[in-house]
Length: 322
Image (tube, rainbow, N blue to C red; front, side, top):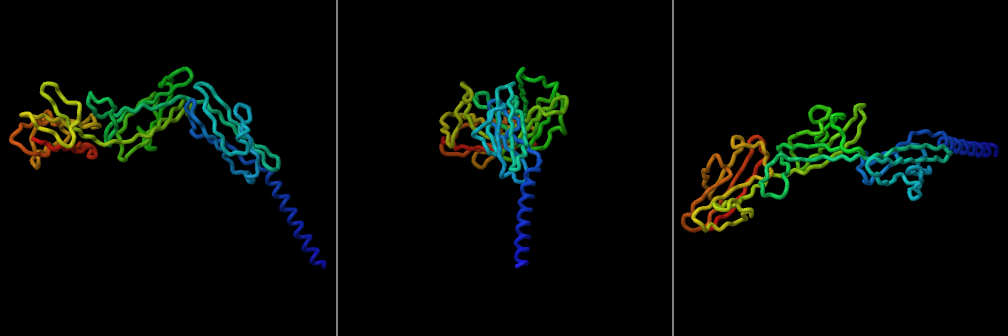
């Protein structure tokens, strides 16, 4: 019986000690607390998700309170995330999170949301005809010019007072930041899309804003048009077949999204009538003039390839009924 009493006393003491250590662990916890915002640099009026980031022991048993400009958000009680709306340009809001551990220790974290308008203007340096009402699109190997527009409550910032770092798919363009470099140029990489990022820093090295945009890559789109000697180029593209009724026919191939740096010297082009290569004017490699002879059907094909960017190219064809 003495041994049994000792065993009971020993286990009871061990249980009390464990409980005491458990409570002390909570009350003495001083792990840091932080708020992670997504997006980090929101636009005015943009929705921002704020997540509580901590690794405190016993955090699952804590009480969490959120405050926006000192006013508690009751609906977010004990939530580890808060959704807020970024204020208007030039205004700020302060987000505060309080975490109370079971032992009574309270830790706080705060962040300030001060939106700045930032945008990236993309200007692909590729070809589209004048009558086209859309915009030129980037193609693999072509050149793109990008411009960063950053605006605070006073208006667009003076780029000379800031440093810009441009990144293409995470790789810095030009080796690093450059003062006043609100514009950059880059060659479109392989792939169906790419990401362009700009970071803007003040003269103290503090980041002002960061903006990224995902840009889809298009291929060279070759389209055939008929050219009338009196009215000029028809704005309606030729489909799979074309009625060749007149004595002569002029065709024109338009290479949508071809790099503007392309020239007849670095571009391979070829017209085929049936299986026969047709020679044409070197000065106008995209035009072909045919004379009608007899009756029948004949396929006509145009092929294009940029020798400096082999992924820039394509072909188009139609069938002539005469």
